[in-house]
Length: 154
Figure 1: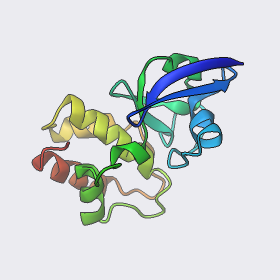
Figure 2: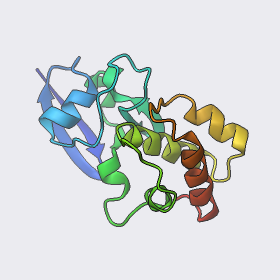
Figure 3: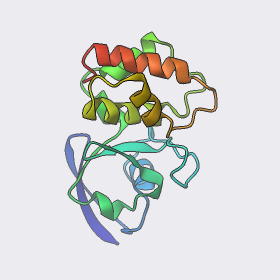
């Protein structure tokens, strides 16, 4: 067991867990934040994406020890005070179908807009192609990202 400290959704957090435990399971099982989803367990599907120091990070393959002294944002933290522009756009564009991949989609889009507030269609496609949507809502996802970018994306 190790004591690992990081900033989670704006709050300094310390957990006592095995340092090799995937960040996903620390978030879900230890801390009770269940928006981040388990999909493939191999970092391929993107359902488990969170922001680590602003970068889209696959939490299912990231040992919690790599979060030490980092800033982690989950979907719960993205819209903690009020809905984030992406969350508003997701609702307005009626993006979700089954909804399972949506936390990963939104967090990946948040990383994109943080790095590039006005992405081109090609940049959106490149970034978002890393998160799989079994329902095929990609056109609505793209529209929502563009809508959020027009509103500032922050």
